[in-house]
Length: 638
Image (cartoon, rainbow, N blue to C red; front, side, top):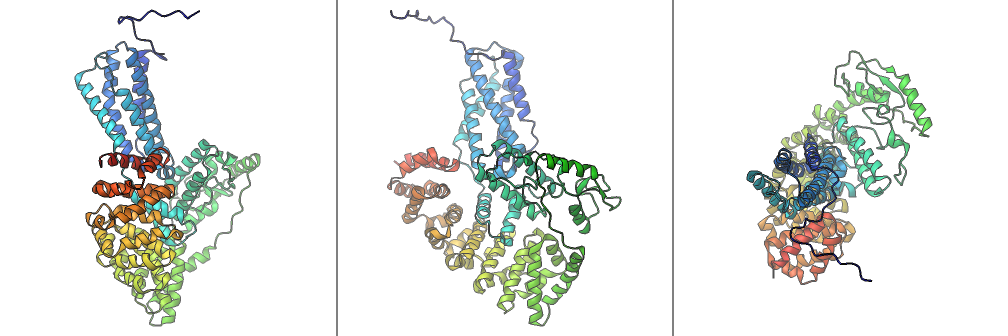
């Protein structure tokens, strides 16, 4: 028997109702509460600050719509209710994103910046879908507010299509640090210094907050994304090391399981951690301010001449240290209960050794100015070792006139002394104030001369020193004008593997200055970079492409880069390269194709359409956007 047929609906029949989880007034009120709470965060991580500011501006623009709805309290049609519910979900996503960018791990947000940006774009799409076609007449919304929201909605739609502006410097620094884990030279420390400054992970308070954020992230991941988590922890530990925090494990003095599964160390009470090292205390002591620290950490603080409490910064009435037996017993009980074994600590160097070092440095600085070559060689060798060890040594060397003495030795004919001298300056240049002292002391021309004619190790460390000095914008221009790019290009072309990496990093830094782009191109950087790309054993394809991307923004450089042969090389990388290779190659091709349609047409002849479609679907977040932009650009070419 056929099922009964329903009579046709008349135009006067009501629309099918939608499920309503709350009253109209409650829905509007919830939207207002969500917007207010999303706007309450006072600041955001530097890597997402611009995107968060845009989002907050749009939330401010949608507020009058919600306030008029609350005041008018109209009966919501099913369509209006549905759209406001969609808007509520988008606003809730906005609040989650803003919270993450407010107190999430800074390292995670930097490493995963492309993924985070894709979340912003997804949320913009949801907001646009909810506001597009909003029945303003039914809602009794004023024309002024309607025009304001529609303008905002148009901006939301454009924001989804907007090309992203990558922080190339941050990306390059992360790439170098993550690839060169085994390189413990102070060249890498200089990059770490810049990263720490850019990510605002320099002070004890910042590192402590980051440690807590990473612990929370690990807990949320519950053992997943182990490789990414290990990268985050490794970077945090390296930031702590350059800040003078002696900690090897973000999870405290507990060996971290390879699987990164949950373990008791994830729930270490904050009171058990020394505010200086962020490690579980084994010998807690109380200082005059009432704060508790690990004995050896606070003693080291006091021995350095400090007379304030590290945590409160208040002056200490006295320097006595009182054992905190109660806290020590609590820590031991907690460790016993959770089967946590505290690491045995290596003994600290005796205070007498530190005092001896303070006495040695002035005499070593004096020795570098000696008329006897043997005395000079021994003194500069010792200065090289001391300048690498710790910030205190670098300060003592600079304060005792070590920088002018070292600059005076750069022209020394002794190869080994020259090598030790430039390496000492590299170590000292980690400190910001020393960069200026080295530059203003006239060191750059002498370092460039060693870069041209020194031993292989001296050339490598000269390139690394120029990179370190070029972190100051005024030094970028000075190094370029004094002829530093030509020998760096030569080192990139024919140096050792480490020399090529040092040269590439320095060149990347220097060509951020517009005048240096032309200088580098004139010095032959393009064929040198092409040679680097072809040498698969070097593993420097991404570094070379990052430099090409900077050069391609300059018209004169683009004329040399933009050849059909180079486009074919980019196409091969897009087809067969690593995910990062593809991402970088797409970025360069998009820059070239935007300025020269024939170059893009040439690339498309090699079956690039299919690869672009595949990457747009399965590539990294950044690669997907670049592929989609190239697909749209390709349509205009025909």
